[in-house]
Length: 152
Image (tube, rainbow, N blue to C red; front, side, top):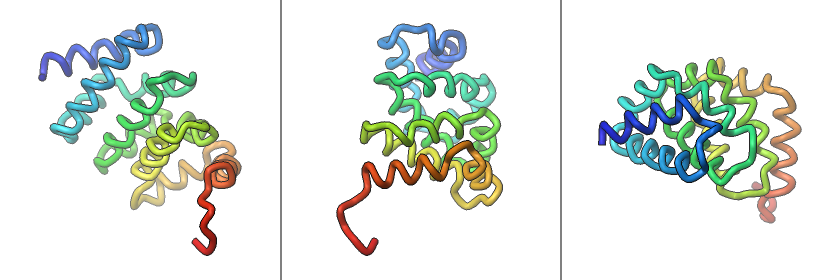
């Protein structure tokens, strides 16, 4: 498992946007499995290798891998020590852009990622609120995908 994780991290670090979708998806799957097995350690390795700074590029263009990238960010941001790292890596602006997606899985994982980054922190919540057009994107998202229930 450690060898697969190391290889996946190297591949993501070296060729995140130039890899074929199949190679990239395999790396993301490996990373999600590793995060499920040992979130804190794997998150630390992502930080050490500078992989998080590669993720905004993966979120900027629509791709079948987009929900997995947002899921990875959501899992990493479960760790309090990684929330600031996520903000510093520039992940909030591309995540906010994804709020206009029509894909439910993208919206789910994006909401999880933003929620985990901002969880219990005024500082990181402020970074989210100051992101360009956040309020407009949220309103668009709610209007487009909101529940038909009233009073909630």
